[in-house]
Amino acid sequence: MQDRKPLYLMTPALAWLTAFMVIPCLLILALAFFRRGLYGGIEYTFTLENLALVFDPLYAGIFLKSAWIAGLAALIAVIIGYAAAFAIAAAPSRQQPILLFFAVLPFWSNYLVRTYAWIVLLNREGLITGLARWLGYDAELPRLLYTEGAVVVGLVYNYLPFVILACYAPLSRLNPEIAEASRDLGASGWTTFRRVVLPMTAPGIATGFVFVFVLSIGNFVTPALLGGGQFQMIGNLVYAQFLTANDWPFGAALSMILIAIMMGLLTLQTFATERASGAKREGS
Amino acid sequence: MKRKMLSTSALSAVAVLGMSAALQAENLVVSNWDGYMAADAIDSYSAATGNGAELVLHGTNEEIMGKLIAAKGKGYDVVFVSSPFAEVLHNLGLAEMLDHAKLPNLANLYPQAGELAHDPGNTFSVPYAWGTTGLCYRSDKLAEAPDSWMDLLAPADGVSGKTTMLATDRWLLGAGFLAKGYSVNETDADKVAEVRDLLIDAKGTLLAYDDTTFYAKLVSGEAELVHAWDGWCNYGIAENADIKYVIPEEGSDLWVDTMVILKNSENKDAAYAFVNFILDAQNHGWAAENILYKVPNKPAMESLSSDFLASFPNMAISPEELVTYEQLRDVGEGQRLYARTVSEIKAAP
Image (cartoon, rainbow over all chains, first blue to last red; front, side):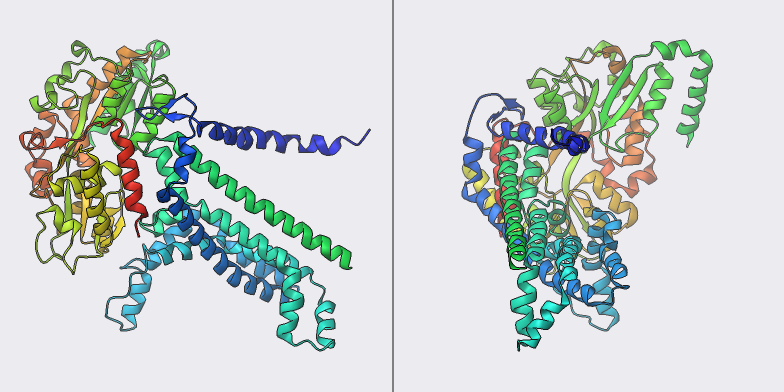
């Protein structure tokens, strides 16, 4: 008989996941195949029209738009986050925990509060405008808040710590002798980074990118607050189906597709990480 | 202040009268928007009637409707919803047909409040507050006072980028319907498409869609002209007297928030007692004085001071004028078209 202990230890977590994640997801999945009643209830007749409607150009377009904004946010977060993680990993080892602490410090405050802080900064009568006026710039600034840029900035800001942590892990584990060997064999600093460091830390980059992308594509708070409701992302559409249009079946269909996209990406990322670490083990 | 003392003394009186009444008390469940009635209304009601009562909150009509439809109206006794949703509850057979003998305070309502299009004769709903939707603006910043919906939908150069519109589908579309001279309940696909195009053009000139903080944007100066419910414009007026409210010449909708007793309520007598309690001139007047919403209660409105009415001119819009505007009605299947149209507007570049 195998040791059963791990199973017992996992039971609470599994029970939690089953009750609050798996079962609700299955309920949502089921809802997607029914019809909306005339007054917003659910009519229990089987239909595929909700799923078909997701591929209607209007809604497919909103999916693409969300993917674009999420992709842009993830890309920017990876560039900034990787650089920050690189700097932290290169710092004296005693300082690294302190620097990491500062990187995750924003997580100690509420997401909404952090997002509202951007409204205070960016609005037409906000701190940035005030600063510009104080510096003597009297002309009207271009609009900062309620733009696509503001939404991307909000997403990058809120999810950046994930990227820093994800990239810091492989960077800090990197054996400095490998980079030294590359230099000794005649590679320039840039070539060493591009051909040695970057490939070995790619799993961290992939993890960071997928995290930011997945969290961003389903986000509805940031587009609502920083986009002024003018940039509809898929999260806002799902929200609207459940809470204003009262079309739960269509909202469920949209959620299912969204969850499928997220799961697909996370699975790909897990495979990529597995393969990368497998290759590393073979190589060593 | 006086009210608070009154209710505290009433409470202690009940406490003295004994616990037996409280023990037998039915437990009434009322669902309302946050802050839409006096914080002590539930306690005062319990004190006055000896019935236990509990207030639960809903953020939107749709939220409470979702719960009511899913539970067939069980678990709630009285709900506050806007009139189109009261209509839906009635159409679904979830609303109690009202026995007016149990609501003597109905006599306080203006006669117009008994003839509302969604429910003539108050057969299943009792109006709680009513008002208009129009333009709220900074009179010190706009060169000219707005008087048309087109001033919002196609703003002048200096105003462009400094306007907001309500995002809730019925009111967002309503602005377009009124501008075009259509019914606020129009469901003809061509006319809705025409309004959609108008609103997509208007979107390019907006600062934001905003249902909740538009008056704060006026106060800060971020916005200068916003699409607003009259009561909410008053929150801006309270902070800056240069903020004014106007009903555009094309008209407004008449919105009515109502109280509905659920047919499946197990505490019907207590539910009637609660609705009747709210209709008391003093209790109903609380909403006018504190939430700055017009209430359809004649003695309550007549008790407002002339200073108050001078500060908040839209509180003085008469019931006669209010009922000239068309009410938002439940549009049944048309709601799907509305939801899709609003998605099209929001998704437009």
